Image 1: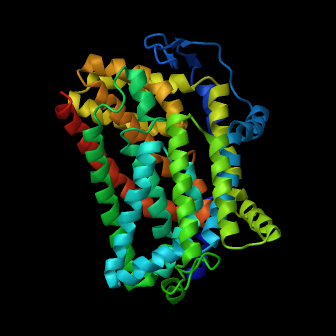
Image 2: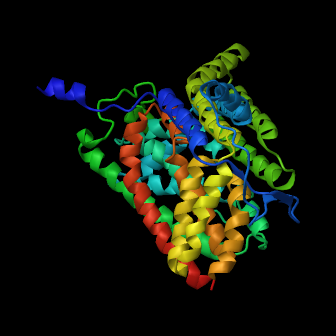
Image 3: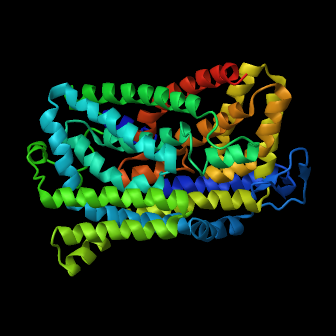
Length: 465
């Protein structure tokens, strides 16, 4: 009887199949929704934006089955920059991880922290990753760290969900609570006509509040499964390829070579910060720095050239599935653009906001931006599409433009690790998690954070009155 029930239990489709279903669902939507567009102009910051009040119906360009399948190739091309960045950065960071330097640092923390006190590592690293994400817009760059945190979490008596959450929440909350991220807040404030980094104090407060909520949730779960491993949502799943032995981890060497590797990592990150902020570096230049960090670290450890090349090749193999997910997710955007229905969705979603009270309209703006992030997972793309509508709309309903920007960054941030069009499939692919188990664990936390954001949005109406 139990066996029959197990067979009848619903199983989420393979991630490739799930993404393909979404692609065809969006293609069907292009036959149902009217095609529409906004007029575009170049603002004072030199950014192409849509012109509010110019939405108009255009000739329908529905996407047929053949065109939907063509989008798979188009999605790969569209996401090529991210795909190859993830390939190279993942393999490069993999070299640093394999030196054991990071393990040595964690071992030091584990020797100092005993029992339940070890759980403090969770909020520490969520905060550290979040700070980098909030300031210089690191997101894809954190993906190579997922395997190491999964291994560390398992070694500490937790599970792969905890390890994945440390990285994912750090990056997602960093974007949600960003106060100077040039790719999201910087662009949104520029479009809204606000001074760069204005309102930073309240944004930092919001970031801290969200980190507190997330840390409490993750720590409680971690301590629960440390006490009873069978309570883990991934209990029985195989993570042997990432598992570390606790005693080996605690006694891991942390000598001069390991310290030099960490110095190389810190120096590389400093160069990335400098290049991103002052030289306008992006994927092409960042790939060079990541590759140099990895190769220099390998040389410090005394590895032979063939060994280095072989390790890089294994890194490419390990990340291939996740990189293909990126291309499939981008195919969804290609279909929506081909059908000319993105502006239609944005326009339709913006109309009801003008009929709500101020505090409620701010929360509605948050919900709209959160849903919009499913359609436009690119932070800069979402800023360009929605902020020209939301900024003047905020003027009409008596809400500060700072509140409109806050709704955008809240909607763009944490939902990136929820939506299948964002990073959820990629995170799971790297960590070896099943997407349905990630959602089962993360959705309650997402709703808690969304509730926290709603309160912060309503409070922002008063703060920026």
